[in-house]
Image (cartoon, rainbow, N blue to C red; front, side, top):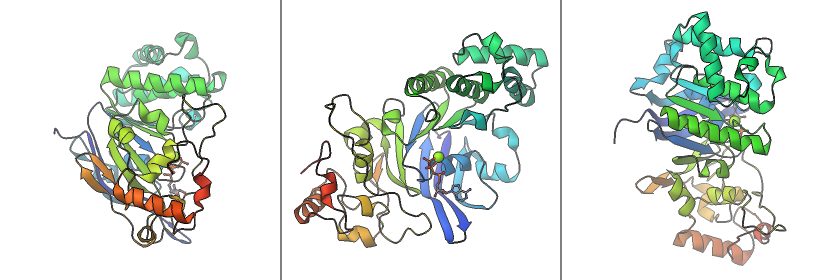
Length: 356
Ligand SMILES: Nc1ncnc2c1ncn2[C@@H]1O[C@H](COP(=O)(O)OP(=O)(O)OP(=O)(O)O)[C@@H](O)[C@H]1O
Ligand SMILES: [Mg+2]
């Protein structure tokens, strides 16, 4: 395989807190090829944004980072230490959930895009203004000429996010990181923005990391998916494999939280019982054990490591879905009605698609 555009190896990010070290990211590794999309999926607090911010050199100075991040053969962490700021915003850019994080409320939209072009690409004022108009048109902003002279507050949420995308694309990055780019927008606008990102990625041959808590969002859009929980990778596979042969109970539980078209209107979605663990005090077992219907006694004391059962598909679980061990653990819990972690199996009894 050719050298990947981005290669992350055993990334660890911790924050010292009054209660002890908070392990926000714990041993994450992935490769991303040029022009490909990686989906990072997980519930709130699983370490998705911290991973993205590490890549973008946006962590606060008190963060403790270990591991390697290579971009096209260059050591990104070393570049950060040497303050090679020209890399970020040019070769690697990011779009955040809230467009106002990236926009200056008191500057006209056109000036903000043009500024990026002038600073990074040394365009003249006039060229930058023309290019800013072209960029707005490319991201589907109607009446782009007029928009250039407006302030962010004069635009709708969806248009603002398009402006942010235009700014992120200004310098033709090779990697775009989109961190929940649509969660602040209403449903119809969400799809338009996600489709737009995908079209632009394809047109420009750009690679993308798409971060979301919704497996449904990455289903038709990502080439690879990494499922994160409590800072760790629970499952990693190409998208088709993940959906057809998912092995981690957490991935399965996440899937059940997505509405399906074939569901009867009265059927309810299944929220995952409980909530994610405290990242300061993760204990020694599997971080998902407390919420898992496949939990066995060993899951409470022995943290499963991420293992590849075949090329390109890795999972960190003692009793994976679809295996004999998984079926046995589930059957045993069903029999007793409660998991070794004390979770009532009745919680799942009315669940859609429940296996009994
Ligand atoms: N600057 C920081 N200082 C201390 N702890 C932090 C900091 N940033 C993030 N964390 C903690 O790191 C963990 C991972 O946070 P992160 O923002 O990556 O989650 P996330 O997966 O992006 O969640 P969400 O879906 O809510 O955006 C959380 O426990 C969070 O509280
Ligand atoms: Mg986040």
